[in-house]
Amino acid sequence: MDFKALFLQLVTLFGKLTQTQKIIIGSAVTGIVAFLVFLMLYSSEGKKGDNEGYQVLFDQLSPQDAAQVIAQLEKEKIPYKIPRDNVIEVPKEVVYKERITIASMGIPKEGHVGFELFDKQEFGATNFDQDVKFRRALEGELARSIDSLAPVEKSSVSLALPKETLFVSEEVPPSASVMVQLHEDRKLTSKQIRGIKKLIAAAVPKLKPENVTLIDSEGNSLGDSDAEAMMGELSQMQQQYKTKEEKKQEEKIINVLAPFIGGKDRVVAKVTIEYDFSEQSSTSEKFDPENVVRSEQTSEEKHEGPTPVAVGGVPGAVSNIGPVPELNSSGTGEKSEKTTGTTNFEISKTVSTTKMEFARIKRITAAVVVDGKYEPKKGANGETSEEVEFVALDQTQVDAITSLVKQSIGVDDARGDLVTVRNFEFQGTKGSLEPKTTASKTSEFFTTYIAPFMPILKYILVSIILFIAYKKLILPFADRMLEFTRDEEEFEKPILELGGEEDEDLVEKVQQMRKKVENQLGIGDNFNEDELKYDVLLEKIRDIIEDRPEEIASLIQALINEEAVPVVRGQ
Image (cartoon, rainbow, N blue to C red; front, side, top):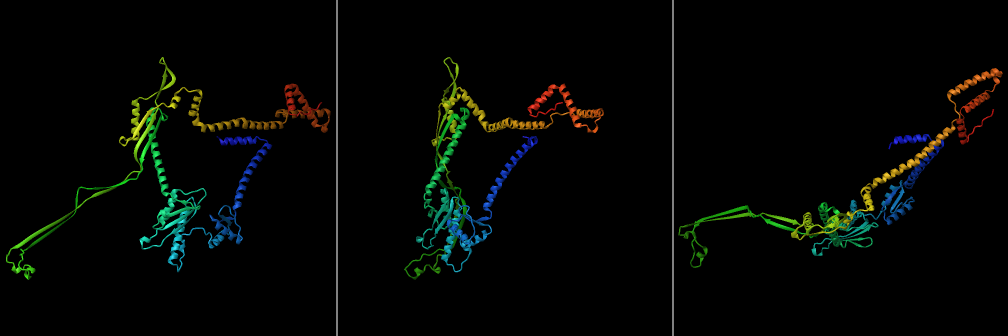
């Protein structure tokens, strides 16, 4: 669209309007713009006026803290506003002063305190005091973490930390209790409940998640059936995995058979997969038969000396002392040698741990139904008609389809997988092959060729309606206004116009006649020039009427129609 040309047309059209029409249109446009500006300014001023001069003092207050804050403000005679629940606003010039003053009074009291308790050191504090402060700080930090969850409005944590003992039999495990207040129409999921318990158990030594008790503001215990919830989630996940895999195998079968069967609507496939979701892991050790020497040690001993003499005789001193070298009279010596060796071999082994997959296929069963052929029905004399009849597939084709299905989904006969293929007549297919009526043809044509372009056709239809409205309403109205303007301009013009040359000739003739008449009559300066002009003009009109009577009649008829008949003086 050429906006420049459109703008020029609008300017031209506006210039052709009468003064009254311009005033009316300008007043209407000015009034509409002023009304819109008034609405925008009024709404913005209203919002600004409501919040001007006030700022938030505290928000997210509990009812108890809000009551104490309001009591303090009323005591100091400070104006305040409560725009919504748990929010208090005061004039901005006193907001910081009042915030510090109220905070020094320990308000709000419902907030959690954390490890900032240890920012201020207290002299003379006992171990018991330090333990209590540590427990309060830990409870506050845990409560702050729990409050960050979206469904939780506020929470409270209480820890039971028993004293440590040297006797294992007397040791008591720690425990914890958590109270949560949830937002309206919100609830904690089983994952969030388990997360809260694990969070608290991880922050406290020797605390187990099962020793954490969680309740809501109504006293209902949360997370008692964690095992059942986990089993339910696991079962749901397993079912989703099973359904997804079965759907994937069904799509494989349909995509393989559709091209030569005649389309996806002529194949129906259902696959059932039995999975084993049990978790299994195995560890194996493998020893290397090739030995490698790790270390070797050899020891050698040698001995050389006389042969010992056997001592005998009556028990006494000599027999108890043993042989005496000086008594050795044999003179022969003895030599001995001993060698010892130790060899250590390195025995290598491989340890492997295998964890089974998430799901193992136990068995696959598939049922496939395919459509047959449709041929024109033959009459008694062998002529074909428009009607069609069903022709079943032969066994060879069915076997070929079965083989394709087995290969497409990976059937294992040793595993006990089973595939069944049957050939039946599809009523929908036969109906589509029958001769179509006029209504069905029209519906099919609309669905095939018109329906995809409906979004575009809507805009085209709207454009046509706007074009017709422009041609039939806007343009005639504009032409009517222009015609009315031209009629007014023509109406304002003088009825009788004389050309420039005729006017000059007429003036010269009048002047000549005036001089002539003055000379003949001797009237001089007292002669009435206007009467002379009137008489001359009247005579000229009479001549014109005699020369062109039809045009003068038409002119008089037009004057009568316009209700502007001039008064003609008689001679």
